[in-house]
Amino acid sequence: MKQGAGLICTAFLLVLVSAVALAGEGIEHRAIAISNDYEFTVENGVCSGSGTLSDPYIIENWVIDAGYDNYGIKIHGTTRAFIIRNVAISGAAKSAVYLSYVKNGRIEDCTFEANWVGVTLNFSSLNRIAGCSISDNTDGIRFYFSSSNQILSNVFADNEAAIWLDASNGNELLGNYIADGYTGVYLNLDSEGNTITGNAFVNNVRHAYTDDPNVWDDGAAGNYWDGFKVFDTNEDGIWDAAYLISIDGDQDNFPLMTHPLVPAPPAPACDV
Image (cartoon, rainbow, N blue to C red; front, side):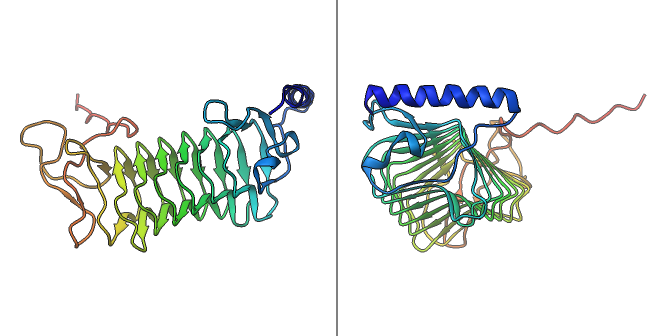
């Protein structure tokens, strides 16, 4: 992005921030649609960057009420690097963020609530979704034919399915808190070779489902599965029996007894 455009965006944000301070509300923005590399503009919420890996375009600090439009942010067919950061989106009829035929995108520290889907990737790779709060959607994250992406350290709550992958391979699902949904992770239509470790599955009707081979531990530690309890004879913090994912052999061989994101149960009270 040229320096002049960056200055315009900065001035624009300063005006908005002043208005926010007076109104006590978030910085609102209309829905954003980007369909080629030339549409990463100030009008489309871009505030800085040149689109390279070392200087990605930045879309940040917006509140988007999609108002039942299909998407809050839709990016299709681009080659430039970008970050969507600290953006809150609600009310999208299809997906809060929709990335299609996209590489090198990052979605960080965002809030997606009360959408049909929080984040959708379609034929996209080398993207990262990290540190987001994703709640009260039908599906939290949905991948179609998308591989080599990362889903890291997000908090999922009250989604029908937190993470649903269709025909998507080689993705990493690491360190997420996945709670209070019907299905935690659903791997479908030959989704295989995905790595799912370090996650906490809490109070889901079904923590995980797959019919295809995936990786559920790193050879030393796996995931925390609420409600699973057997024995730990060597007191290493790993249950001594595997957690079964599917009858075809997928299992977490090193299920965790505790997880940093899951509070320890209170100590029993002593009778005095």
